[in-house]
Length: 135
Image (cartoon, rainbow, N blue to C red; front, side, top):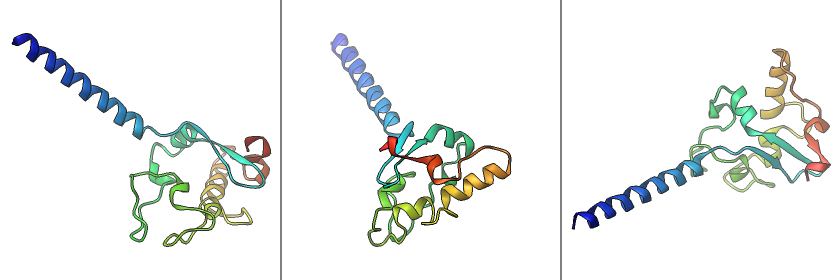
C-alpha cells in the first residue's frame, strides 16, 4: 500500500511540475519575430533587445487595457487588437500602433528618436526596418 501511495505522490508531483513548466513556457516573451503585412517589407523585431532597452518594463511598449477592448493577458501582441482596418472598439490601425503613415511619430519612431538623442543608434528610416527579404 505504501508503494502505491508513493507512486501516486511521484506521479502527482511530476504532473504538477510538467504543468508549471508548460505555464512558464506560455508566458515567456517571444524571441526575434518578423512583423509581416507591410507592402514595403516585413520588420525583423528583436524582442529580447527591446525588453533589455526598456529595462524589462513591458508597459513601455504594451499599453494598459482599455475598457472597450479588455486584454486577455497582461501583455498581448499589438496585432491581437490593432488590425487593418481596426475592428471596433479599437480605433488605431496596425500601422498606427507603431507609427503614423508618414513615419514621423508613433510608438516605434518616437522611441528610436529618443534613443538616438541619447547616443544609442536606432533606425529611423523606413528601409532601416522594412525589408522585402523579411516578407
